Length: 282
Ligand SMILES: [Zn+2]
Image 1 (cartoon, protein in one colour):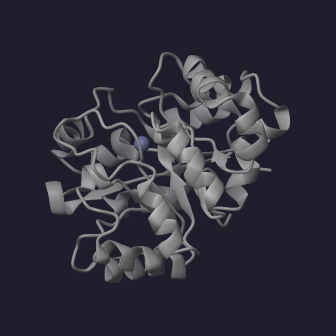
Image 2: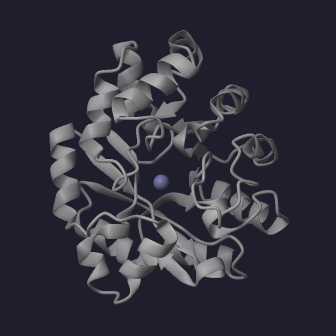
Image 3: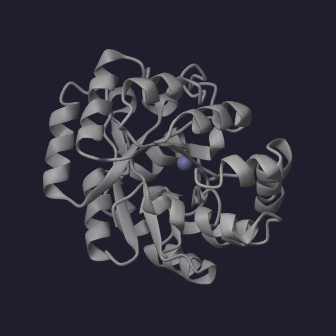
């Protein structure tokens, strides 16, 4: 079994930033992050410490709203090609682009695309818009899982309107063969996430990012308190996957936090890897 981090943002990888002058300022402004650029080696080091075999890189295509990809999908996919043992590449296409479906087909032809990353708040779209639904149907047809931001949004510039996990109940009904990962467990809408997860076979959630203290405090809060441990062990054991949200959170810190969590060891193994196996073709 591979241990996988499904939520890594390659926004501050220095090998990529060096090739795109001006991108760092865009990352700071749009993605709102102050951490210094780091070589890809930092990700590998953190993986090594955490005993994580593979990480999923998630670019975000914000062309409609901000005229930029964070970072360019091509650069991310080339990095994945360089380190195929350790990196898995999701693509990101702004579903409001007129050529969204064409661009998706093109990406899939050119690269080893494992899934799609979407963020309705940052990309500024309504997941129930007809154009988006058509795009999602295409993702299902191509057997590509969609990892979507759900939950809290800090920037007032971005809307909360389309990031409630309940939005995806309707989509999971309309496009029932689409595999969906609700990022961040939809925090703080944890019971909404629970409801959607337990209603749909193809919907999963990742535990990435930390909203309530340290990684340990946060995971303990969301997986044993806010959602009681018995609920997680009984109903969500096959629905949750591991993610850090690097570079916002260090991969090894998040993995240590999950490792030390007071829940059934088999459930932790599932979160670290077994559940991802049902989602991503490895
Ligand atoms: Zn993220």
